[in-house]
Length: 154
Image (cartoon, rainbow, N blue to C red; front, side, top):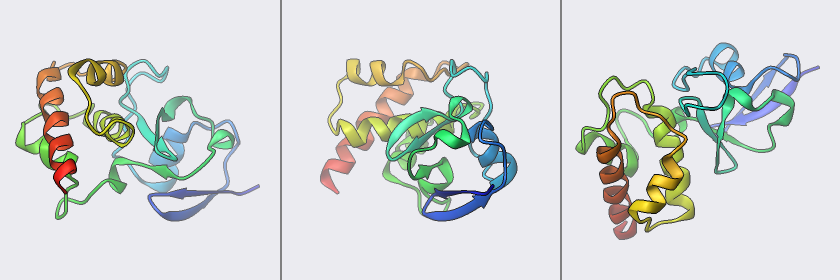
């Protein structure tokens, strides 16, 4: 039986078992490879996407359990038209190896949507489940503050 999902504003129909993780639907079936596989147990945050604006670990959400519109890093902006948050990431040179960055950005976007003026503690709390092996946490925090400031003025 086909399942229909809305991903980044586009409808997709897939014929897969209900228990297939959303991560593999996105990467293998739809071809959206910006969402990364990290650990497979929701401990690292590399696979973070949003469902109806809520940051979730796509490795742990079964296809049958997707409850709303999915947004991936590909839906945040384009190389020609970066979102304010993505621009802040570039301006603060957050990415080093870059592997965790799509998950970091999706988590940060969910934070800013719910809390447009986060404190350092708010950022640390929201981002604690997204691991960066390169240790760019101070840059991540600075980029989130910068994006929050620019979003407020926009």
